[in-house]
Length: 374
Image (cartoon, rainbow, N blue to C red; front, side, top):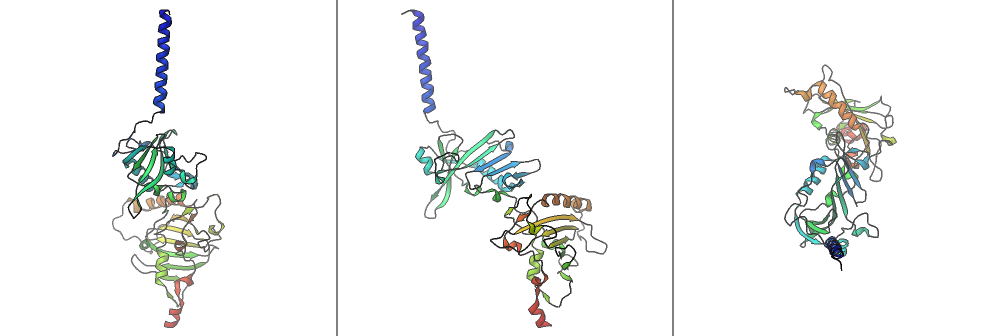
């Protein structure tokens, strides 16, 4: 054999050995990328996140960072609950690894860690998936969330099985993420308005025609009781019902939002009665509660906000310390911005909250007691 031919064969043999070693390396499970007891996502670039996708649940959720706020894409870009998003990111950033093992196919199915996209897999074997992206759409993190681990007779979960990215490793983390694996409505900013009852000066109910007053209650100052201005009646006022009406804007928690391009007929102007809450500082909230509802019929409500300086002789703010936020120009701006946020939306609320928006005087009167005392 010639020397050149021998050298060529040696080179070819070395190449084949290298290729074989590479193939064996690729087939061999990788060593864990995260050691036990250390944070799973310590290097997650939190400040670069502009999109969070959660799928594998009944209704996928896409949270996106817009110019002014985070929104829920599946709910017509309605604002997202920023505190809940912060909790999710913080929880993921802080979770620690309690255990790690290389999973078999059977393990992945048993622990519900199969990809939501994989065909031929039962629903009980599919994972929930969280993905986070940056402004360029690049994937910053992908996590498959499987079953929780329970201990003791209480069966309370004390950890959760997850898979990070495309790793073959299954991690048992020290947190449970199930509470975050919910549909779009659970990610909405739940409290669109919050008005303390003590700040309400006048409550006026106007019939759907926009002209006829059904009732007007007013109080002469903060901390003083409401008085029925119109209509005059000998019946006594049911104070608990009136207090509930006055306090209705302080505890609103929406359950969902309706499609803004298809506003329900019942809450449109000219169809719904209007409750007008005027505050001592001049801020005014118009509430369109629509008609009665039930557990079977969605309870809708919509809001509008405006500002008008209190007229001469009317009760005004008694706070001596008037900062920038209480000045008329600041209040006008606040009302305008709040109205822009609220006016496009029709909210769904629980029936018990909807019942607090009383639009008929008879529901505020204790007719029986009035007649007995008369």
